[in-house]
Image 1: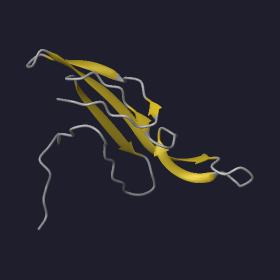
Image 2: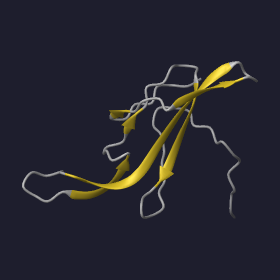
Image 3: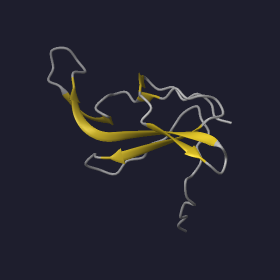
Length: 100
């Protein structure tokens, strides 16, 4: 079961794929995380930020209940980052490596 994921800006669906094994469609979104400038405070110079396709705060994904979706984040920032979702079940596409 998938819930709605709500952030702040709407992103359009990039593409959909048909899964012949399940007989269901899978929606695909691709977002670049990259540096950009944004006016935050009036009267001051623009702030240097890192955001999603040049926006901050992050995006809104409006998804259909019970329909699978893949959201791919491409890191174009100058440092490593961690992306997480609020309000949805997130499934690993692979088995994570756990270091001890």
